[in-house]
Length: 255
Image 1 (cartoon, rainbow, N blue to C red):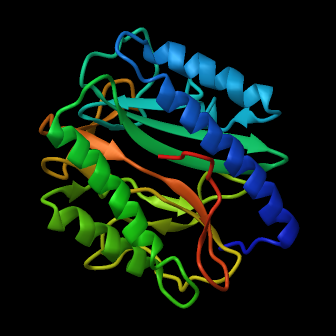
Image 2 (image 1 turned 90 degrees about the vertical axis):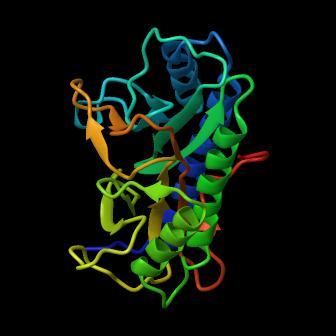
């Protein structure tokens, strides 16, 4: 069942979203040449805890870290390690914060040092995909309207979208109904509900510079592009209102 949030629950989600967004911003500033992904994870973990929240990803379904840090061909779920960032690495950071029983979930992609124009364009288009989808996050539209907008933006720019992993409802749990694909299913396998005021969902384009095909590495978590081409990720938790959608994972200077 898709939940619709009360005014009190929305306030709690705004708080969780703000902490998650601030944590994402902290992480982005730590994406520098020579930094290890574990050092980024540890500093952002401490930031989340210092703000009275808990990292929503840590131990979620057994995940061993507080952030997902995915580099270059890694699409999502990269596990922080001693790996050092190199000049031009494309670094996707996914972060969640849980406080007072509610979760904020967001992601963005950064470049370590100076990146190529191709990498910069991939990141920019992925962000644009989110905002194209956001235009349809309104009462009366269906989830598939968001999906169609994301897919059109990616493919019109020569990119592809990942199909095996999708956006989702978010609130008291990390993943709640409905699923929010980044493409239009033909034939449709998922429910395609109309959006109603009070729903909270995460729209999260995962965009590949090459083919859409992906595979999971032997660690059971890290998802990579099958052709080894770069991927980017951008996500925010949003609230469906009676008017414009509200981004809940928002902070000053957000990417």
